[in-house]
Image (tube, rainbow, N blue to C red; front, side, top):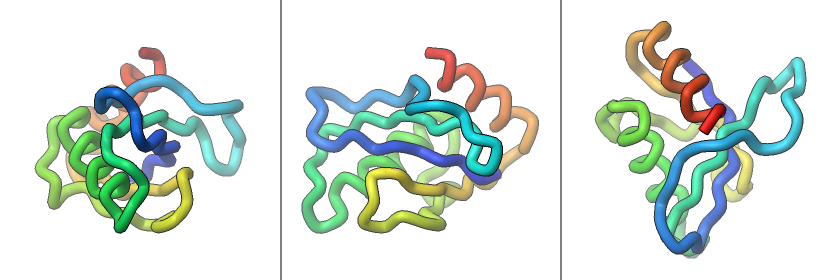
Length: 95
């Protein structure tokens, strides 16, 4: 399952939840992820991947960056049971 996320580096604590901007037909909803790491040498991206894995109950290896290595808006590939991932995504977007 592919998920669009918006990373907010340098937050006081890591948190996954909320929706960024308006829902677009081509991209869908964008999940907000606050990470404590700064955007230096890929630290924020790695923090993002770990936070998303934890929020979805996955191993870090089951979350891969597909698009947006240096962008704050990224696309991630989550490997797992599609229905449970979709349910969890809806919960996180609503929080």
